[in-house]
Image (cartoon, one colour):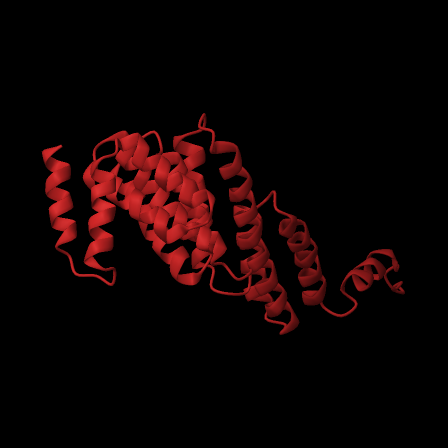
Amino acid sequence: MRRVALLLVLLASIPGCRSASEETRFFDEVGALAKEEILAKGDALAAAKKWEKARRYYTFLADAFPNDPLGRQAALKVADTFFAEKTVEGLTEAQLRFRDFSNRYPNDPNRAYALLMLGKCNLEQSRGPMRDLTPVREAAAAFKQVVDLFPASPQAAEAQELLARTRETLAEHEYLVARYYFNLRAFDGARMRIEYLLANFPASAAAEKGAALLEAIEAAERPAGGAAGEERARTTPAPRRDR
């Protein structure tokens, strides 16, 4: 309790936009509550989508009890409130907090959840296969960690599904770039992209299209009359020589 009392004094001394009386009321309230009650207060506000107010209770709990399972849970809930806002700023803040949690607490039972949500933050910021793919690649890396490190976790099935979706996006990117090179008749570049696609995403829907495009490249590179000419050469008898 001495730790909580000290934290209350420190927080009360920080200048902010809220009035001193409002801060005092808040600290008087949380100072009289048990940890579970503080968390329940935040949960009730979050259920009503009052994200900023909910964050006050979660943040206090996370700061007062950083090594307590309830404090760590509150830290994740702070990140959840930012994610729920679905704004650029909110997603960026949530991404930082989920990443920080997963790095800081590698053995925490909630790490699988933090990694799953980190991937979702990245996925929310992706803009399709022909835009910057950094968010997609980072999302795939986070989902793969869940699948590889926590295969028995409640988050594993969803992570596997989302990982498959990110891989489809990455595969489609390779196919579309290959198609672009093909249209320019830059066949070497197109072939390299397709070979990468087939090697790294063989089960994707784009792989089937890539295989068909590879056949089109080979046909386009074949000399005029190539196959038909070769067939005629094999079937036409050689000219007879008079002795």
